[in-house]
Amino acid sequence: MSEAQTERPPHKTWPAVAGAGLRVAFGVVWAVGAALTWSPDFAVHYVGYLHNAAQGQPAWLAGWFNMWIALVTPHALLFTWLTRIIETVIALALLTGFARKTLYIAGGLFSLLIWSTAEGFGGPYTVGATNMGTAISYVLIFVALIAINSRGGRSPYSLDYFIERRWPRWRRFAEWGTPDTIAPEPERLPWRTQIFAMMGVLVLVILLIGGLHSTFNVMSPSPGAAAAAVSPLSLASTGPIAAARDAHLPPLIGTGPSVDVHLVVSDESVTIANGVKYQAWTYNGTVPGPVIHVRQGQTVNVTVTNHGTMKHSIDFHAAQTQPNLNYIDIDPNKSLKFSFVANVPGAFIYHCETQPILLHFANGMYGVLIVDPATPLPPAQESYVILQSEWYTQQASGHLMTANYDRMLAERPDEVVFNGVAFQYRDRPLVAIAGDRIRIYFVDGGPNLWTSFHVIGSIFDKVYPDGDAVHALSSVSTYTVGPGAGAIFDVVIPKPGKYAFVDHDMAHLMVGARPRVALLATGDELVAAGTPPGPAQLVDSNSPMLA
Ligand SMILES: [Cu+2]
Image (cartoon, rainbow, N blue to C red; front, side):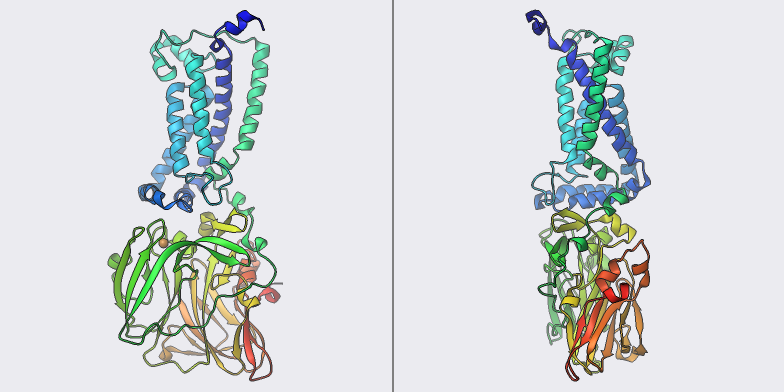
């Protein structure tokens, strides 16, 4: 290259070509993203994306996400269509070079908004983040286009160029600077060079699509993409779990006419399988929340303190109370107090009531409240509390899982568990003495699946569908408990051995839509070990049934 050539203003040709190449390549990426927004799945899961993005964010951002969730949730369809239209318009404008100045500014701002909402400020400090977030790279590309366009001036490779020739005022939407400062029409490159440039654009498109493919996971909730992800059971250690949650019925929390219950909501990583954790929302730090044990007629004074990052609430199935007053959302760092009288005996669930309830539920916000009848049930030598529930997951990072709203909506759990952790009572059985009466306070936390409770090799002596001795059923082999319901089971096992307790729903085993999850996770056993009256054990293992 000669001296004269290097001194020539560079905007004459290459900035226009480079700008057009980057713009068209970027336009292809946007077109793919825009096309995915037109799938029905995108509309179905639109609100879910927002909630998913809100998870794992720092507390000081709770207000920002809550504002968008409150704004979008009642108008999900409107926002879905706005997103589709805006993304499609941006894609077409990028591909054709239409109103570039306006486009680059608006596109950059729109990407900034997407980054801070739908992607949840994806960044190195976000739990589970492995990149800086797709939309923020879009912002940078728009900035690069602005830099190139403002120096390069009019581009013969754009629709703007032809519009401006017929309507010069169009430059206000397309060019930077005044008519005097806008660079003159650049020289066109020879055709041979243009062909090379087009090949360069093609390579750029491939690189962008390859490098930014994660954007398509964000914008298209293709269930296949999520389903192919790692499952918590595939990550779990196959060895025995170190400790299981104590399933013994805890004592009454008080014997007077009234008792105080304080639940504190917090975000915690809880174990859901041996060596696998989940970013849960909890009551008192565990999933399920604490077992609350009261007696019929006691007044329960409830305090719920929200130390989470978003609104939460509580709903006690044991209570008869005004939901509009007491089951209301509690802002972060605020408390709610109310009282109810435990008039009805039984095994009840309590759970979060904040929208979307499915997400709050499935993230771990549930527990058991037991109301002893005023006239006690026949005495039992061992009393256990078992809550069955489901986990719907995707990998956040390593052995840490996070919520999968698609799977929640599809009722496709990765695990169905007793007391929160897969296989824990297979490894650490519940023990009882052969011949003793074993009472199981059973609650189906769901959030979605029904359970058909059965102890293999035995028959329930009594089933108390509502905890009232008057309503007892006798000699029942298998009994159904729906999501949110509870029942009390008495079983007497005369001979020592291994007695698996299972959810007897074979469809969970056999139907591909709900894969082996239920089998793997729900098979626990009641084991009566030793010679009578030796200890009996309840173990976790439905594998023989499933095999
Ligand atoms: Cu909640």
